[in-house]
Amino acid sequence: MKKTFNTKQLTTLGLLTAVLLLMAYTPLGYLNIGPLAITLNIIPVALAAVTLGPAGGAIIGAVFGLTSFLQCIGVGGTSAMGALLFDINPFFAFVQRFVPRLVDGLLLGYIFKGLRKATNIHISCFVTGFCSAFFNTLFFMTALVLLFGNTEYMKELIGGRNVIVFICSFVGINAVFEMIASTVITGFVGFALYKARLISTLEN
Image 1 (spheres, one colour):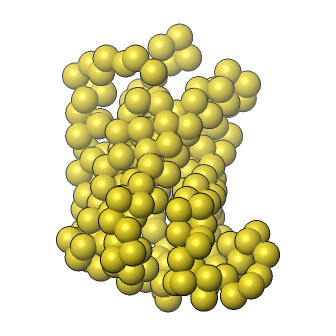
Image 2 (image 1 turned 60 degrees about the vertical axis):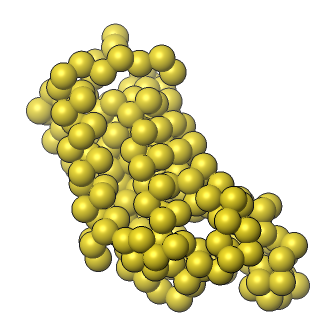
């Protein structure tokens, strides 16, 4: 994943970082519903992967993960679940909030590169947007269950249900909304960035 950004790419990286921070620290990025939040911060991650590849996706994913973790301690908003997890185990809370978002961005870059070789820019952007939301939910919930599944807090949430049933019922409409929004917005914005020649060619 060795990557050297040129001036245009560094500018794009800076702009996407600024957009993500703006969304993370304003109501634009999160819609809190119950213990979880509908997050649109996955969209800048997808756009970074589209325009800058795996390295760019990983960087913006890491920024997203860091802002998500900071909410556990009340910086830039408060996550009720995050605060509880932080009280249980601060290190695990960091891993659960940070690592899934970084891995999401990294994988999205490779997914987009692979799709560009197999199909057109429209489909590549739409699928990358969908995967951004899907992987974010999958990795976030998997880390939650693996790291905190044996705690009393999680046992009460799971309530004796099958883990897969619990995850599906827990994320519910939040995940569906995120997938639709990320797919549509990444698809159209990604194509606009392609027309503006901000997406690297296949040879790059």
